[in-house]
Amino acid sequence: MSARPPAIAGFAVLLAVGLAACQSTQDRSAQLEEEGGTKLLAAEAVTIEKESTDVKVTSTTLLTDRYGSAVVVGLHNSSGKNLVNVPILIDVLDAKDKSLYKNDIPGIEPALATIPYIAAGGDAEWVNDQVQATGKPKSVKVKVGASSDSYSGEIPEIEVSEPQIEGDPVSGLEATGTVVNRTGGEQERLLLYAIGRKGGKVVAAGRGAIEHMKATTKELHYDIFFIGNPTGTDLEVVQFPTLPGHEPE
Image (tube, helix red, strand yellow):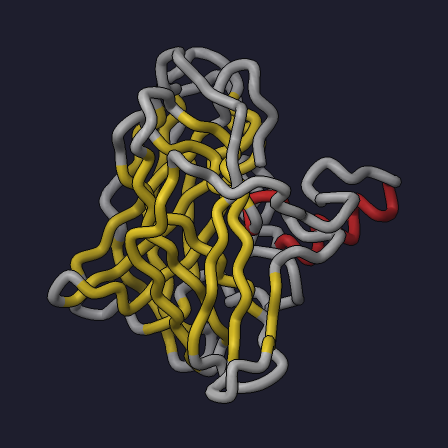
């Protein structure tokens, strides 16, 4: 079982696959800096100039454990379009409503400030498991921005297995499983969310990603670490493949 990567402000767990070993987002970001690349990072602070009238927040959950904090936001798209790269800004507050963390910082991974896809008339959940609060989080404010980006094509076919829970006292609990690329082409990035519920309430969540899935039906391994305890939950893994004609977030 892989060791749990340490957290760093503004970055998420990122898992490389194939013959390479697991690689954390921190390691990948350092590599990009050395190469002068910024592919996975937002160069400027994320801003919302206009709030969305199509996407409404239906729920917010703030999770905290010894590994850090996470925010899970439920969303509903009331429009007739499949929306892509919808901006989401969060402000995590303490018991006195003092701001402890915002995700509008330069250098953040774009997927920590946007949700890649929400189907027309559909519901979705967004996970940010890299909330690096400077105090004890108590509540969270959420703002959803308008997106002019939409998608009308077919969703790439990626087969994701049912997750299994593994873990130990040191590394923490994780969801593990396999994915298979059924698209017939290369997938630049597959983003995965794992969300655990008890009695309909979100009690655990985490994120992972698989980079550069080649045009092969070979099974690839995923593992996603949690904030919160997924033991005994109704566990779901949600996928966001790279859409044709759209850059991965």
